[in-house]
Image (cartoon, rainbow, N blue to C red; front, side):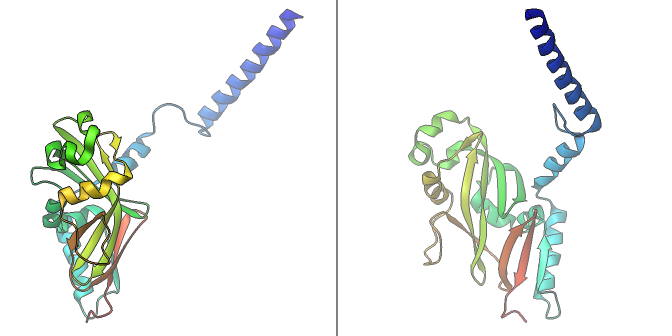
Amino acid sequence: MGCLKKLGCLLVIAVIALCAFWAYKTGWVRFGRPSEENRVAVAETWQPLTTEGAVRASAALNQLASPRGPVYVNVAPGDLAAYIFQELTHVFPKDADSIRAAAIGDRLYVRAIVPTKELGGSGTLGPLTALFGERERVQLGGTLHILHPTLAEFQVKEVKIGNINVPQALIPRLVHQITPPLSLPASAPDGMPLRTPEYVGDVRVSNGKITLYKTAQAP
């Protein structure tokens, strides 16, 4: 009986192995490292800031400024970030490098390699400071809002430094370390100001792209 039980177990294992092999060969299930297509898709999510991208964003915004232009335009995250690069220098220190932008879900993400001393040290991050090196990748994720003509707000919902997710309660303190808080009733405690053209009335992030809408007062 013991031998039969062992044979039964071996038969079950053999059947499971055959099913797994069939699933792998037919493509129903994949094991191991992601495919080259998936790796490329992930890599393309984050877009670098380039001069060409800034030109594309500028051209898109000029369409909104035109009296006969569309009521909205779609702009790639990297292109918009390149266009407002001077504003992003207030988000990240001037000696930051490898700045990238992405639109994931309904949020805009910006990341860069920055000196951790620029983040306020232990006064801002407390004991977390001991976990970081001299330079770390800092990633900010949040939503965009138009507060009034010429002024938008990047409301930071999540911050990641290196591999550490910053606690939600520390985000406003970190944001204020990087940029002074806005003195407007509609502004959020974790918001960063960004100047925008007066003819941009709304901005939305969805499906990997940013849509800018013309203001109702635009010609």
